[in-house]
Image 1 (cartoon, rainbow, N blue to C red):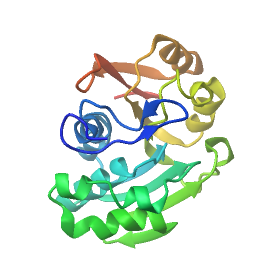
Image 2 (cartoon, rainbow, N blue to C red; image 1 turned 45 degrees about the vertical axis):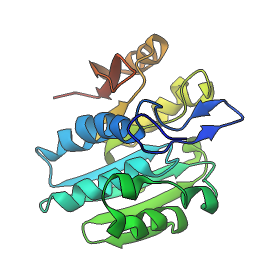
Image 3 (cartoon, helix red, strand yellow; image 1 turned 90 degrees about the vertical axis):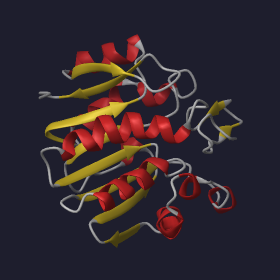
Length: 216
């Protein structure tokens, strides 16, 4: 499906929900995960470890790779978690590299979907295929991109046990960013000890959330 900024999203027919915002897939990902996540930390960190829950189309990972390329003083260790990887024929149709004027890095985007691990200069990528509750972190993470389907479509991903697990993955001072600002979700985070920031959302959403244990 074409979204408001010309970039693709995918409709999950079983849940009747899209992988990215229909108002603009790239706009949403840049706003939530890059601007308020990676860029926010890059101001004071030269190495950032990122854990993405809901790797999906790979758009967030690809934008993170491009951000790292644009900042010579930054290296990124990136781990994606995806229980249901997309079929190769779907990945091949996604237009992100064209929309981002980054066709020369299309091969990196393809590698994210075909290789479990690779390094490209200052970007180290890993993909864990399975359930987030089965994930065993080998390193602590400075930043978590939480990009599961919305609570109404995938409620099991928004239960307290998931965020208890993610707490154990964060470095001291680490943060979690997500497009969701649902009241129940925020109450769950607060009950676990997270501190929350409600930030302006991307087009189509009033708010988004940045959360951490000791936000600065």
